[in-house]
Length: 139
Image (cartoon, rainbow, N blue to C red; front, side, top):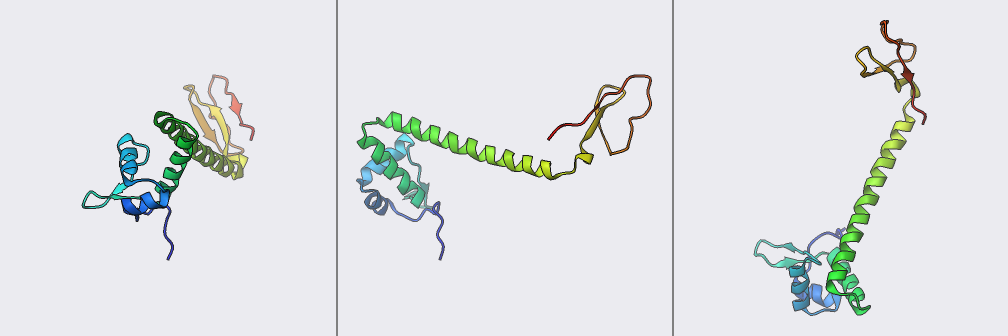
């Protein structure tokens, strides 16, 4: 059986024991928005392994003298960094896909109205009295 780190399976008493904290501390962290466990249908808190790891990190930072507001800001910044890293990975993958496409499909020209048109290899823009600039991006 494979359990996800995000699976909310621990009740507050078990989560508190795993994180080596008092259950009231977990409730306080929930109110402050430091750790937000999921709720069961009866409104009771359910903690995941990821939540337990977060509680341990909060405890470590607290023991190093960081205030709860400081911890909250650190966690927000870490989440922001993770989201940005994920976006960089998405964009890198998209760029890699585009680089694998043949350059033939990436020829552009200025249309008669000044718009950008895509041309196939060997195709020329329709003859007009205006000058046409052809541009091929470098990859």
